[in-house]
Amino acid sequence: MTALVFDCDGVLADTERYGHLPAFNLTFEHFGLPVRWDVDEYARRLKIGGGKERMASLFADPGFADAAGIADDETLRRDLLAQWHRHKSASFQELVRDGQLPARPGVARLIPAALEAGWTVAVASTSAEASVRAVLQHAVGPEVAARIPVFAGDVVPAKKPNPAVYDLAVTELGLDRHDTLVVEDSRNGLLAATGAGLTCLVTVNGYTRDEDFSEAVLVVSDLGDPGHEPVEVIVNRGPATPSAYLTLDDLAACLATKTGTAL
Image (cartoon, rainbow, N blue to C red; front, side):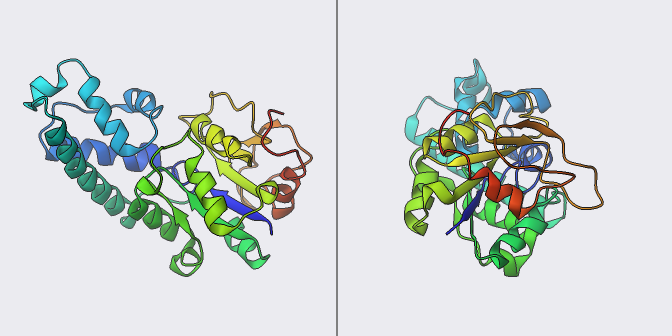
């Protein structure tokens, strides 16, 4: 059975710049932390997989702990991180509910089409599960979202680029790795997918466009929609022949390429 597995952030919606970044800063302000991330700084933090892990990286910043009045106590810091992350997740979900994060092109069209064609569709993300489900429901509607299993948050001990979340999805859903296509937006996600032996299509965003996607079968600006700006094909290493927007046939063609190898 053919399967289609989506990352969430930057794939289902442009969540990083318009969702997670402001949610992080709202959290820093709420807790009186002496830090605000701008677009460039957040781009650097995105190299770290997982929102909680990005927050934890603050403790490696010179002077942060002293300025915030936080003692060098591992238990205390772990508890603070948990509090910060809960607030950040709630702030993010509120932004989603307020309609601040529209779905990326093609998502609301291709996911129902894939389900109708009998494909298995899932989401695998390093973000908190509640946040992922909120984005998914907003992108495709609650009825469609209810048909899509989500693997997210701390469901695995290691975040992307580790392949653990994709290995879990394959095992739990009984997927055939050779018939499973992953849609990612970053090099970390690409490495996680190919590390699990899965073929990966990349839809870039402003944060990831210049990353190395050597292992991807197809790299495009987005999945596209009829009547909208045509998709830009950045790299095509497979037999797919996308035109103005990608179709299920294009996605299926990506799987005709040998899985999990640099192309």
